[in-house]
Length: 87
Ligand SMILES: [Zn+2]
Picture (cartoon, protein in one colour):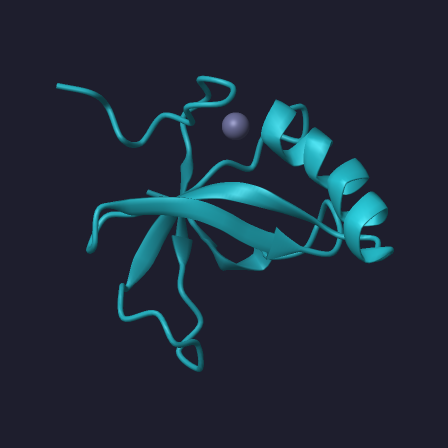
């Protein structure tokens, strides 16, 4: 069994992240990689700067309800950290 709570980009254990109630996602929480050294996150800054000229990036997220993973957009290292759920 593949451990879905591990980030596929850096191998770090992802954190449970509380989904904002105003969002369009139905899940209660996602697993999100909050490793600032994660290659996915690091590459995102450059990619977004090159393609959209905006200073933002994204972190890897996994939605345990739908079983899908994808980017969670963030605008700074600290963004979205307040929604981390400690076990
Ligand atoms: Zn990662």
